[in-house]
Length: 354
Image (cartoon, rainbow, N blue to C red; front, side, top):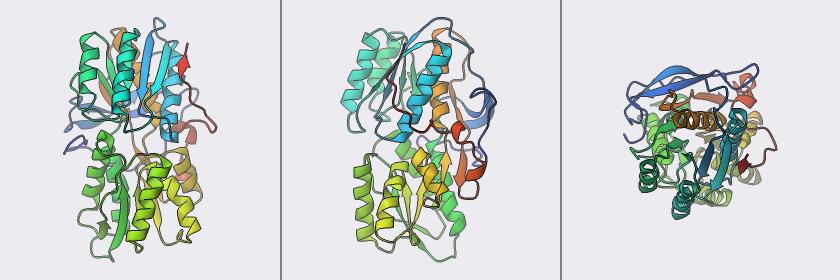
């Protein structure tokens, strides 16, 4: 099973998010051992970042895009942590999951520009391995954030198991439609083909629904732009009008809300996302979206910055870690501290911290 967290990992569903008094830490997290292993085991840890950086290090951050609220959340995390630690940080984004060559070029520019470390939200699971190796050979550590890469040359991972995210989403459906109950059809929209997080979420979702009464239609892959996802949803509604659920990326769920409302299908078709965004959070509050696991993307960004500073300064660090996953639905959303898992409302992208 590629890029999943795997054997020995408890897939427990929590119903409340962590809360903090004055800052984001200490934060309940999970360390994967052995680090970087697709078959590693997740063990509970409490994450504690540094108080301050020893010097104003220069870190470069590369994202696939900032077209949706998810990556805005990661942007908020990395920039706020840079401010807290007292370092310089520059953010670039490639413009979409089709722009692999542009992301490679941007990382090369980061290295050439004298960055002390690179934080990478990867467009491709395998396609950035050469540029990661080139950076590592020049002594520039690369931290893998959110999406996952197969490169053995990275210095650290700050991410969760998207296998578990997909699994928890599928498990939610399986519990409602167990084996022997009336079959239901589910349209499945895992995201852009070839991205590591998409492959992992797809594996987890399919494993979870196996043996249940959930019939998953052919997966519809596509970029996580709203227009692209909306077209995929329209295609499924046309080809399979008896579909009972639409499950997939947060953008899929957000875009589908309006479409289902327009067609009077809100009460007939349920929506699920396999990760959390502000739009998904609001959709759950309003009863338009059934459930979604939260992976605390803001915290993943913060941890990546802390890892980078620790590596630059030669300090101890956790090589492979991510926030603990918990599921949010209509019954539990009132127990969730929104500020623990999402950026502030109205947040706009920040590209530079001096």
